[in-house]
Image 1: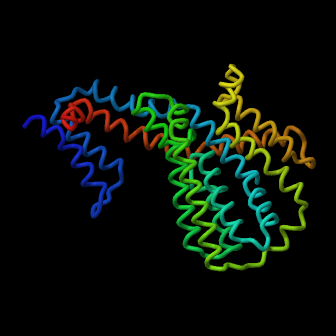
Image 2 (image 1 turned 180 degrees about the horizontal axis):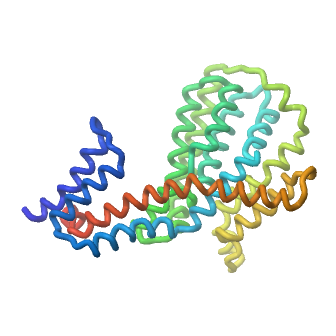
Image 3 (image 1 turned 30 degrees about the vertical axis):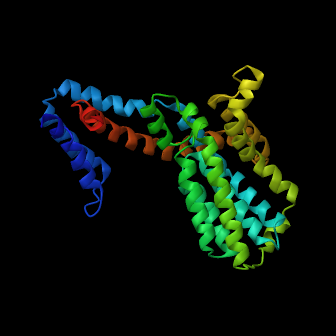
Length: 315
């Protein structure tokens, strides 16, 4: 009976976060942790250590923070929008192919950033303006987005899951990558077939064509290069036998490339560098919020773990 009682805090958390109550995860976690403290008779010192360990476990995964900040920064300066504009030009008259490419752009952008909201606000309206509402495209983007952020080396989800596995986030992301590619492929096919069968036709905004194709391509290169480094960096290190591709070197190289591509000649070099620095730091905000939220909740889970909950569940 004592073993069963240790499961009570977990049951309480699940009841509180699931319908019909739907309480915030922090409130549910707090209530569950307080119940675990009463059951286990934990001291204030042990509670404090367990909770702080949960926060530090995730905020200490710096590769996630720096990757996500870099990807969001690239989105803010216009690198992802340039890819979308390039797709307008390439697939004019063949919108079903453009639909497939937009799904891949969404997938790769989410994978690079580890977040789905920022780039979706850029891509989704453009997709809608080009091909309208196509259920298969919406479904395809809904498939690739969670697949990407739950397996990205830049996401809070990957940080948490890898910490529970006892491996670093890069190892986790590499293990998941084959499954990610399969889901991307299936979603892309769904979008292409769905758009083709519905016979979607639309006029591409002529404003896009006023900018040369070469300019669109050049502006998109920082993000494309960043994605290539994330996906192929580990293989490159194996081939060369030297760890050249790391979270730090990848981001520094991409920032340098983006500086060259998006350098504002009307501003001084000080203003350009200042803007880059401020935008990059500001771009780290969303991932830091998510990691703190996940770490704070993990602190409550650590308290539950201290009373033997998981051992009882396994038994």
